[in-house]
Image 1 (cartoon, rainbow, N blue to C red):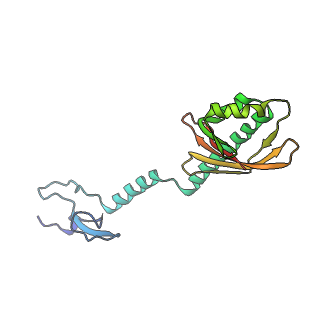
Image 2: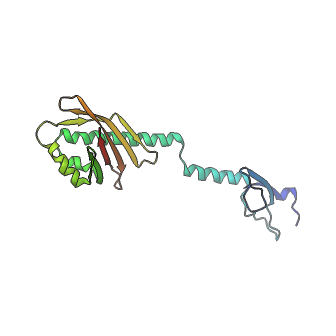
Length: 191
């Protein structure tokens, strides 16, 4: 059956499609019929140009968010991590070791100089003396918080101040969003 102009439609296929297109990154244009040779008005099984664009828009839109949406999510996560870091530091001021440990992942690694402390139990054993006595021996506050676009890891960093307020170092903490949705420290190293 010969296709008349009324029965033809422009369709876009990738150049690598198996209908004889040459291999190239651009799309090839081919004319295909909208009627089946055995009759009927059924659309050919191939998608038409406007349909391809519609499907591509839907799939593309679902697979990636606009940059402003991603940036908004990153900013919200950064604010959440900053609030968690401030609350984490408050546990030292409040002299509350149990609350301090609740901010730490069970598999965390804290560095004591160059010596790694592995796991919450070892961290608790080494840090317990810092929670003894009335005045806190040091404090910290974040001045930098960065979050991956995936929203799964974050870095917080800032000055560490001695009991009299002088800067004695800088902390660097890596936070991970855990399965329960809470951010917890997985790595911590001061300088």
